[in-house]
Every structure is written in C-alpha cells, then in structure tokens.
Image (tube, rainbow, N blue to C red):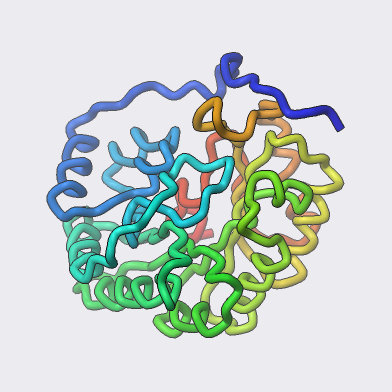
Length: 288
C-alpha cells in the first residue's frame, strides 16, 4: 500500500463548492448566534454548509464546540470543554420550530469528561423537540460513549427516529486517525441500537484515506450483520496540512459503484457521493 500524500491543492471540479451568502443563509447564521447554538456544519467546516443554510437547515452540535478527543481527520477543536448549557435543549427546540424543520439532526462533540458522556443532554434535547406542536422526526448522531450500554440506553429511551454513529473508516486506520476510538466498540454501539428494534440504525464512512475495496466490503458486511439500514459514504477532505493527508480523490462513478457493493452486502439504503456527509439531505434519506 502506498503512503498517503497531500493532494489537497489538486481538488477536482466535482468537489469545488461555490461560496454562498443568500438572505436565508444569513438568517440561519443569525438565529444560531441569537440562541447560542453550534452546528457541526460550522465547526467541522462542512463543504455543504452554504447549501444547507440557504435551504434553512443545519445539523445542531450540542455540548459545546470543544471535543475531548483529537482525531486526525476532524477539524472540530480539541480542548477543555465548557460546562453543559442547561438552556441548550430549549433553545435548540425553539430553533427547530422557527426553521420549521420536519427532520432535525442532532450531533455532539465527544465528552469523555462527563459522567454520562453527554447522553443525558441528547435525551433532554429529544424531549424538548417532542414538545413542539408540529411533528418532527429526530436523528441523533452520537459518539461511542466509550461503549457503555447504559449510556446508549439513555438516548434510546427517548425514542429517536434515527440512531446514527459513524464508523468513519476501515479498521486499519483507527490507530492513525482515531487513536481514542475502537472499531469493534463502534460496531457494538450500533448493534446495541439495532437490538432495541425501534430507531432506524445508520452509520457513515469517508473514503480517500488509502483503503482498499476489500477493506470497505468487509466494513459493509460488518455493518449489515448488526442491522445497519442506512449508510452514507463521502470523500475525505483534509481540513488542514496538519491533518491526515488525502490519498485519493474518488470519482463520482466510484461512489456509485460503492453504493452498489454496499447494497449487495445487505445495507438497504446507501447515500454515496463525493460531498455526502452523515447528515447531508438526511431528511430525504430517511423518507426512503
């Protein structure tokens, strides 16, 4: 296997995204600031941020913008987290109502410093959204909670419609880019949700790190075997030169082929394209 290389300066046309500053984009930014809310769109520098904000949607990031882990693929800031904001669940539900969302996606930084890993805050957010007069489907994208089943149960007890935990990459790269995570532990978290049988179970992968088709197929089979129904596959984009380098830019046709392979491995709904991210068009995927 070749060594990874920094090819970020040679980004292909299909990955180039136009800057966006529509009135709706500015309104969403203002709303988030007004209610002291964070989004993974901003903190992870998502390439789809302009499109999503301009369509009046965002993926909410709870428990603050600072992560206790320091993965080499992620641009979310590593550092000492702030205390949990007790007003966050109410403020987030209010933003969902103002934006007239019909599908809300809630994610978080990893909070290994908290006794419950932040599971209680996920539960409180779900409760507040459920109080809204309009029906809103809720998708949670959770950390691994250090594999603790009782914490996964806290989130599942509030009956989210979709339970998402990203497997991120093939096992071979965990020690290099996710040293504080564990492939089998992440599979176990997804399996816990699948066993409960209520929420649709979802995961996400990035490609372009140097993984092989055989390695990806093994991950697809592992995910299918534990009941993952939804899978997103997108191109890895290094946030900076200090992050793990990009090995390859995959052509859109290759993403189409990966979707076919994942489907053949038993995953029912696969959303695979260069700019796909875990929550990109999540409402459309959930409706399938």
